[in-house]
Picture 1 (cartoon, each protein chain N blue to C red):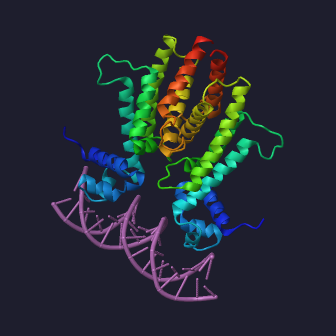
Picture 2 (picture 1 turned 135 degrees about the vertical axis):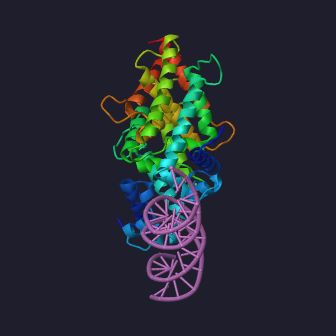
Picture 3 (picture 1 turned 120 degrees about the vertical axis):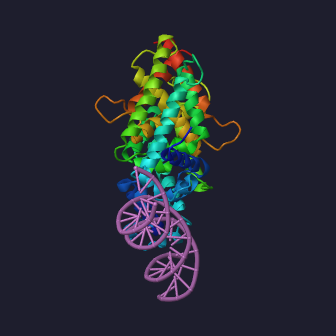
Length: 191
Length: 191
DNA sequence: ACCTGAACACCGTTCAAGT
DNA sequence: ACCTGAACACCGTTCAAGT
């Protein structure tokens, strides 16, 4: 379980993100939390944004593993379970969620590859749904993009408070995703 | 057409946002663009984030006006036109879009009120759709939240590049919104 | 190969002072 | 009532120097 220094810096950044949001992730605080100076990260990452990209890439890979059902032997999560996992992750770790799907300028090849891997796992779940008739026919990547858009938007609007104040009776992100699945089932039955 | 200094500061911030993203919106740059010192904004806003909230509030009000069809006499945009306007705005002004729907900490009553107004206009369009049968029955606020989630998510994922690289054949945010409307129409026909 | 301390440019914010 | 210039604390980044 020997963790590399690079990993411990990514850990520190993710922890600060959870505690105080992106504003709390300063190189000084990251260095402190990892027990090194504020310049040490520059030996492992070209940049602060390169460190943040490493955090995001790791989140995407962990997300893809959850999508795949790793850890639960024989599990093949369907599209709905995958979407639910996505929304739960976003609401539980809003800082990581916003960072991961935030605006990335410049080339971040590692991040692009991780995005691609997570998307593939998701499209596979949609293909299984089409095979069993719970998803409409058509380009599975396109249906996956629709599902992801709704789940992402519902989670993002919830986190930002734009779905209304967090009171009793507010429409939750998980309910919206459920509604979409219900409409898709209806559309699959009547093509 | 006499513009208050407060308005010209909001203008300057919005312009910098369009040009260089949120990172370009510094109080020094805002002051420069408005022809005042970097401390002048503090006479009109308590804070930098208060200035940004004013930018976001103005965007929401302009968005609500576009949703209402202001400027085109007699126009009553339907839900689809409203969603299209939303997506077009987000793709054309990604900086304003991300700011407006970003994470707002602390109380921003002006922003909350503007959000409420924009949402009301949108829910009205959904009610009209239900009356003419193109939208499923049910709580109009909930259907509006589903539409907004999809449009918001599709726009956000497009802006962040998480819907895939911007190449020929990529699925566009507007296409995803169209797909949702098609599924909703099918669901409305077969309740 | 990895780390440190000092330094630099930049930022948000405050404050005494001006009109 | 509104604005300014100087100052302060904080940040990302660089660099010479250490092991």
